[in-house]
Length: 335
Image (cartoon, rainbow, N blue to C red; front, top):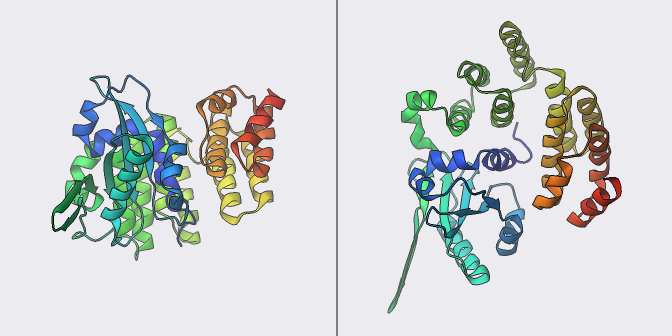
């Protein structure tokens, strides 16, 4: 039962916890970055150098501008290889993106790769070319999620949100042919979010990733929600099984999955009536990002001050948006 947009949860969690991701996977790089200065996702610039990245659902690339502690600007090209099978031309594509960034923007990017496939022997970290008097070796940072299988106890003790991301991904791989075991692993991971004291926002955000990668057959999915409901009631923390989460997040997801305008509107209506304004705004921002690919900071700031009524109207209007200008026009007319 594959998801229709496999890279979406990776993009969402990477953007939500970008500093945590770099710290977890590339600690030496993270140590050089001045995190007190805000980072910036360069979606428009990435689309210019990689228009083909919009084709297919195998990748979750991000181009991000950060600042080093010495004051210099640095572009990070983070590539997450989501697909299950290795790609023969992966290292070459990493080089091509690096060269396009330098050619178009005259900036030397730091290229980083996160490999999610199941082949332990596939470990591309460089591209080499040699011919007569010309030779080139391009190296890039690389981590392999499979390597964390032998560090499970360390993952369980690690409070970095990406420890949960890695555990969910590994358990999803391990239980591809055992749905009952996947159900048990999924519930165990969610319980850990509560037991380790994550705040409500983190529980909900990380659950979205876990729920997406550890999809269950319909019958086991119902059992999972029933068990989770009992567990949350015992702890008096209905973070996930609340009407807000089921009616809003999952209702909208179904509308997107099926491509049905009615399903999307119903999910938005139910969530906006019974959910919180913060969750409503968060999901509408994700819908707009999926619809328009990138949102300028100034438009995000305007959306941040919308009321529940305005968010509901925006949720209905965004179905007709085709470009950023449509959103800009709507905000000017409704603020």
